[in-house]
Amino acid sequence: MKQKQYRMLACLFIVMLAFSSITTGYSVNTPTVQAAIVTKYYIYLDDQEFEVTREQYATLYEIQNDQTALTAYLREILGDKMPENFQNISGRVVSTNVGYRPEIDDFVISDGELVRYVGTSAIVTVPSTVTAIRAGAFYGNSKVKAVILPGTVKKVENYAFYNCSTLKYVVFTANATILGNDIMYQCNKLTNLVAPKGSKAYSYAEKKEIPVTTSQKTQFLNKNMYLLPGDSDKNTILNTIYGAKWKSSKKKIVSVSSSGTVKAKKVGKATITATVNGKKITYKVTVLKKTMKQRVNQIVKSVVKKGMSNYQKVKAVHNWLIKNVKYDYYRFLSGRVPKISHTARGALLKKLAVCDGYAHAFDMVMKKLKIKSKFVVGFANGGGHAWNMVKLGGKWYHIDTTFDDPIIDKSNKNTTPFYTYFLKSSSVMQKDHSWKKSKYPKCTSTKYN
Image (cartoon, rainbow, N blue to C red):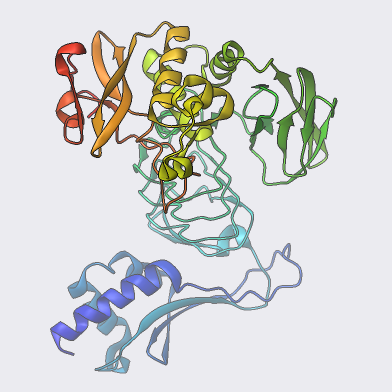
């Protein structure tokens, strides 16, 4: 085979074997049967099938990025059977109907490292023989909802759980001390991690802003919720793979939908109960009067937690505004933005504002938190613009909540916080913002650039 041609085939092998080609063929009536299942491993070169051992299959996975080694190993295990020319290469794992032991047969393990999980269980307990979770070990699994790691696992590589579309939580021990930067990448239904306080996994969760608990007890993310009449919100249930049935103690004050979304109707208090897998858990909702003062109180009570640093408080308020306020985009396009959209009232009570409304609202909450801030007037994107400066650790920084709540695909429905303009120095900000520098503090610190 020509070397140039093989490079193309090696790429095909990487894509198909490492990520999406592993399939299972379980045909088991009773999944609790204790007899050993017979699992076979196959490599396909175009339509030619070659059975390999479990160890050979794992080795092929390991060396897939080394073209020379991959070529040599394929020739070693296939010998004269290896065709000179082929266009596609893939892999498959098939289990026969002689019993099923998922605790053994769903795991492809090599030298103590979990190379690939090939099962379909909702709750996966990784065997205690595993010391590391390889990159892509759970890639694309659409069945697993919870993963429990044993104390023997010390390392979890980057993208270990990449694109696990149903994964809700992962349990770590203190022994997991080597963690990739994006082990949970694109796990969009992830609710939380479980880890001992002070552990590497606990710190990882805090850094990535993933809720984290120290026990596997089913519980709400927040014990209390604060709203104003007309507000809607949803409390997350942690450490469960099950759905819930919902009930409000006072429906005239707070209603709750079948999906757990609560809506505040009038001032008062109510208890929300969720029945999860036969057990009841509760949290309290307090509906405050719909005034500017109470909105600021509601934000502080909702996002500021005990022990937070000023940096964390600023970030929490920045995120609340982006998640709850929409840019008055459509009226901006028509040139008919009402006065209220230029005010804090528009942002905080109507939840619809343009740049100065965002900036006035941010400034108001900072004053409540006794964090020094400035309302900045200048230019950006060829027009007038407003944003803020905030003082942390004795240094001033720019913060633009409007630009961190971008219009995406001509829609103002974004609720994902961006940090492009979060705590930036003037050297960064002046690339697309301008202001009269003599009127405002100097923002020279590059700590958060």
